[in-house]
Structure formats: C-alpha cells, structure tokens
Picture 1 (spheres, rainbow, N blue to C red):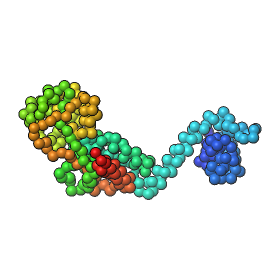
Picture 2 (picture 1 turned 90 degrees about the horizontal axis):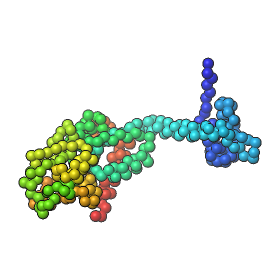
Picture 3 (picture 1 turned 30 degrees about the horizontal axis):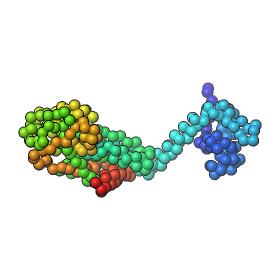
Length: 305
C-alpha cells in the first residue's frame, strides 16, 4: 500500500520563506519565529517528503534542484490555504458565497460598473460574482425569479411590492442613425420621417415591448445585443434611441450622427435604479455592492460638465 504523509502548512511556509529570503535566519525574522523553529520545520519537511530541499554545505543554505522543483507548487498550496482560511472566516461571519447581478447596459456605463466591481473585489475578494446580460425589464424578472440578487435597470414606474430599490443616477438618450442613413441629410427630423424608416430597439426576447419608448415606426426590429445593435446602426440600417454613453464613441468617430427633431422627445434622461427582492436578504457583500455602484454613479452625477 502506498504510504502517505501529512505536511503541515507551517512547514511549507517555512520552506517558502527560506527560499524567498535566502536564509533560515531571514525567514525566521520574516515569520516572527525562532531560527531553530524554522530549521526544525524545514528538516521535518525533508524527512516527511524524503527529499533534500536545501544544500547546507555553504554559509547559507541554497535550494537544491529538488527544492526548486517544488517551490512553485508550495507557493500555490500556500495561496490556496490562505484563500480557504479567508473564505471560512467569511462564511462564519455570514458573508455570501456568491452574488449575481443582472445588468441592463442602457442603465450604466460599463467603465463605471467595472470601477465599482474593482472596489467591491478589494473589499470581498472571496465572493464569486456572476454578471447576467439583462435588457429591457428582464433584470426585474431575473430578480423576481431569484436568478439574480441585484438588478441594475432603467427606472420603472412601478415595482413589485416585495422589491426594494434605490435610485442611483441617470442616463441620457439620444436619437441617432448611421452616418450614411437618409435621415442624417435632414436639417430637422419629423415624426413622419421616422415612420418612413426602420426603428431598431434593444429589448429582452421575452418582452419586445418592454422599453419605455413610443412606437414611432411601423417597422421595428428588436435586438438583445448592443454590439450587433451598434453594428447595424453604423451600417446605416435603421435609426434608434440610444443611451448617450453607448452612442458617444461612435458619434466621436463619425460612424453615427445625432438627429435634430422638430418635436419634443419623450422624457429623458431616464433614472438608473438598483433593485433587489425583500424575499432574499442581502448579506454584507450584497449591501457593499449596492453601496459601491451607488457611490460611483453619484460621483459621476456630481462631476462638473
């Protein structure tokens, strides 16, 4: 039967510190232990593994070929052990193991979302995060069905009674068409002009009427993907109401143009809300995620134009 041995984390820690610092005495100082303790831990590790990890012939011990071969694996094990300890402490403290966010790209600039996620990760590195694409009102549906913990959405006039929400910012929309589209040749665009051309809309497949827009054309195509949506616009296929933060880079490079109208647009900007269900209590990580997204969007709202 194959023999097995038990390697204590302290042995691996002593070995890695000695390899990193270049001596047993420096490792002892780095770990706050006596040099004799470090020597004993490494000696026991060599006995347990049956390997000579350090050559002690010189003034300072040097890693052997066997020691060098094991060093990266030891560091990987120590990192895993540290993550295990941190996650165990977090779970004991009531911290969520994971969070799922349903994100409507219309409601938040992705660079802002990434900034909030970076700050969240600094606070809760052990919490796994899943991001779901959720156009239209699909974010609300995902939260209602328990498939998402938090939704980032364009504000709705009415939420289910068991929802909580927080208004965190706003999002401006503009009327645009591709630079080669016939509408861009008009000094002012009328409602009838829009009726004569294809209208592109972002919407969840489950509800193509979910966006808060008036139907200004008899010809409407519904898409879920903003990447395909913008590709179609820049190709000159259709016009659309588009979030300014998504349209801006395409406008700046001249691929699409903002249209002037001779009528009053429906109420813009829209508000951005964070939503979650009262049926599922958010733990400290969920609360922090809400706070970080709120902080980023509120900072943006107060910056001078």
